[in-house]
Image 1 (cartoon, rainbow, N blue to C red):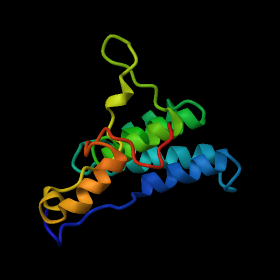
Image 2: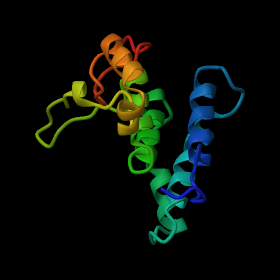
Image 3: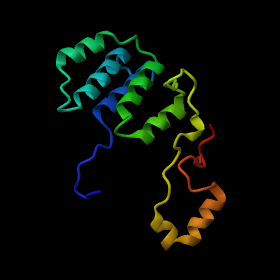
Length: 152
Protein backbone atom coordinates (compact mmCIF):
# COMPACT_ATOMS: atom_id res chain seq x y z
CA UNK A 1 0.00 0.00 0.00
CA UNK A 2 3.08 2.25 0.07
CA UNK A 3 4.64 3.50 -3.14
CA UNK A 4 8.15 2.93 -1.82
CA UNK A 5 7.48 -0.49 -0.26
CA UNK A 6 9.81 -3.19 -1.60
CA UNK A 7 8.25 -6.05 -3.51
CA UNK A 8 9.34 -9.12 -5.39
CA UNK A 9 8.26 -9.44 -9.01
CA UNK A 10 10.03 -12.75 -9.54
CA UNK A 11 12.01 -14.55 -6.87
CA UNK A 12 15.19 -16.52 -7.43
CA UNK A 13 13.25 -19.63 -6.42
CA UNK A 14 10.74 -19.00 -9.22
CA UNK A 15 13.55 -18.51 -11.73
CA UNK A 16 15.04 -21.86 -10.67
CA UNK A 17 11.67 -23.62 -11.03
CA UNK A 18 11.13 -22.08 -14.47
CA UNK A 19 14.59 -23.17 -15.58
CA UNK A 20 14.06 -26.65 -14.10
CA UNK A 21 10.84 -27.07 -16.06
CA UNK A 22 12.54 -25.76 -19.21
CA UNK A 23 15.45 -28.19 -18.74
CA UNK A 24 13.03 -31.05 -18.14
CA UNK A 25 11.29 -30.25 -21.43
CA UNK A 26 14.54 -29.81 -23.37
CA UNK A 27 14.15 -26.04 -23.75
CA UNK A 28 17.16 -25.26 -21.53
CA UNK A 29 20.48 -27.03 -21.27
CA UNK A 30 20.64 -27.00 -17.46
CA UNK A 31 20.31 -29.90 -15.04
CA UNK A 32 16.61 -30.14 -14.14
CA UNK A 33 17.18 -31.97 -10.83
CA UNK A 34 19.80 -29.47 -9.69
CA UNK A 35 17.65 -26.47 -10.67
CA UNK A 36 14.62 -28.01 -8.92
CA UNK A 37 16.66 -28.49 -5.73
CA UNK A 38 18.08 -24.94 -6.00
CA UNK A 39 14.52 -23.61 -6.28
CA UNK A 40 13.41 -25.44 -3.14
CA UNK A 41 16.53 -24.30 -1.30
CA UNK A 42 16.06 -20.67 -2.38
CA UNK A 43 12.43 -20.73 -1.29
CA UNK A 44 13.25 -22.11 2.15
CA UNK A 45 16.10 -19.61 2.57
CA UNK A 46 13.75 -16.73 1.70
CA UNK A 47 11.84 -17.11 4.97
CA UNK A 48 14.24 -15.01 7.00
CA UNK A 49 13.67 -15.20 10.71
CA UNK A 50 11.80 -18.50 10.37
CA UNK A 51 14.42 -20.49 12.23
CA UNK A 52 14.91 -22.90 9.31
CA UNK A 53 18.50 -24.07 9.52
CA UNK A 54 20.86 -25.02 6.71
CA UNK A 55 20.92 -28.57 8.09
CA UNK A 56 17.12 -28.75 7.94
CA UNK A 57 17.14 -27.51 4.35
CA UNK A 58 19.81 -30.05 3.40
CA UNK A 59 17.83 -32.82 5.07
CA UNK A 60 14.62 -31.79 3.28
CA UNK A 61 16.39 -31.64 -0.10
CA UNK A 62 17.67 -35.19 0.45
CA UNK A 63 14.05 -36.41 0.73
CA UNK A 64 12.83 -34.82 -2.53
CA UNK A 65 11.63 -37.25 -5.19
CA UNK A 66 13.25 -37.23 -8.64
CA UNK A 67 12.37 -34.20 -10.72
CA UNK A 68 9.29 -34.26 -12.93
CA UNK A 69 6.76 -31.61 -13.87
CA UNK A 70 4.39 -32.45 -11.02
CA UNK A 71 7.17 -32.14 -8.42
CA UNK A 72 8.45 -28.87 -9.86
CA UNK A 73 4.98 -27.32 -9.95
CA UNK A 74 4.12 -28.62 -6.48
CA UNK A 75 7.20 -26.94 -5.03
CA UNK A 76 6.48 -23.83 -7.08
CA UNK A 77 2.92 -23.82 -5.67
CA UNK A 78 4.34 -24.01 -2.15
CA UNK A 79 6.66 -21.11 -2.87
CA UNK A 80 3.78 -18.99 -4.24
CA UNK A 81 1.09 -19.89 -1.72
CA UNK A 82 1.61 -17.08 0.79
CA UNK A 83 3.32 -14.55 -1.43
CA UNK A 84 1.63 -14.79 -4.83
CA UNK A 85 -1.61 -16.75 -4.63
CA UNK A 86 -2.90 -15.69 -8.04
CA UNK A 87 0.27 -17.03 -9.68
CA UNK A 88 -0.14 -20.32 -7.78
CA UNK A 89 -3.63 -20.68 -9.23
CA UNK A 90 -2.38 -19.74 -12.71
CA UNK A 91 0.23 -22.52 -12.50
CA UNK A 92 -2.49 -24.94 -11.42
CA UNK A 93 -4.70 -23.97 -14.37
CA UNK A 94 -1.72 -24.29 -16.73
CA UNK A 95 -0.54 -27.70 -15.53
CA UNK A 96 -3.19 -29.34 -13.33
CA UNK A 97 -0.62 -29.61 -10.54
CA UNK A 98 -0.45 -29.95 -7.65
CA UNK A 99 -3.30 -32.37 -7.17
CA UNK A 100 -5.16 -30.64 -4.38
CA UNK A 101 -7.53 -32.40 -2.01
CA UNK A 102 -9.58 -31.34 0.98
CA UNK A 103 -9.17 -32.71 4.51
CA UNK A 104 -11.25 -35.77 3.59
CA UNK A 105 -9.17 -36.63 0.52
CA UNK A 106 -11.76 -35.35 -1.96
CA UNK A 107 -10.82 -33.28 -4.99
CA UNK A 108 -11.11 -29.54 -4.38
CA UNK A 109 -13.72 -27.62 -6.39
CA UNK A 110 -11.47 -25.76 -8.82
CA UNK A 111 -14.35 -23.69 -10.21
CA UNK A 112 -14.00 -21.44 -7.17
CA UNK A 113 -10.33 -20.63 -7.81
CA UNK A 114 -9.55 -17.04 -8.70
CA UNK A 115 -8.98 -16.52 -12.40
CA UNK A 116 -8.50 -12.78 -12.55
CA UNK A 117 -8.32 -9.59 -10.53
CA UNK A 118 -11.57 -7.72 -10.15
CA UNK A 119 -11.80 -4.12 -11.28
CA UNK A 120 -11.19 -1.50 -8.59
CA UNK A 121 -14.29 0.33 -7.33
CA UNK A 122 -12.97 3.55 -8.87
CA UNK A 123 -13.37 1.97 -12.32
CA UNK A 124 -17.11 1.56 -11.80
CA UNK A 125 -17.40 5.07 -10.33
CA UNK A 126 -15.19 6.96 -12.78
CA UNK A 127 -15.50 4.89 -15.96
CA UNK A 128 -18.88 3.19 -15.69
CA UNK A 129 -19.62 3.17 -19.43
CA UNK A 130 -16.51 1.15 -20.25
CA UNK A 131 -16.78 -0.91 -17.06
CA UNK A 132 -20.34 -1.96 -17.99
CA UNK A 133 -19.30 -2.67 -21.59
CA UNK A 134 -16.45 -4.92 -20.40
CA UNK A 135 -18.65 -6.77 -17.92
CA UNK A 136 -21.33 -7.33 -20.58
CA UNK A 137 -18.75 -9.06 -22.79
CA UNK A 138 -16.61 -10.94 -20.28
CA UNK A 139 -19.17 -11.78 -17.59
CA UNK A 140 -19.52 -10.71 -13.97
CA UNK A 141 -16.75 -8.72 -12.30
CA UNK A 142 -15.78 -11.62 -10.05
CA UNK A 143 -12.43 -13.25 -9.35
CA UNK A 144 -13.94 -16.56 -10.54
CA UNK A 145 -14.86 -15.18 -13.99
CA UNK A 146 -12.46 -16.50 -16.59
CA UNK A 147 -10.38 -14.07 -18.61
CA UNK A 148 -11.03 -14.05 -22.35
CA UNK A 149 -7.99 -16.16 -23.25
CA UNK A 150 -8.55 -18.88 -20.60
CA UNK A 151 -9.91 -21.87 -22.48
CA UNK A 152 -9.47 -24.42 -19.65
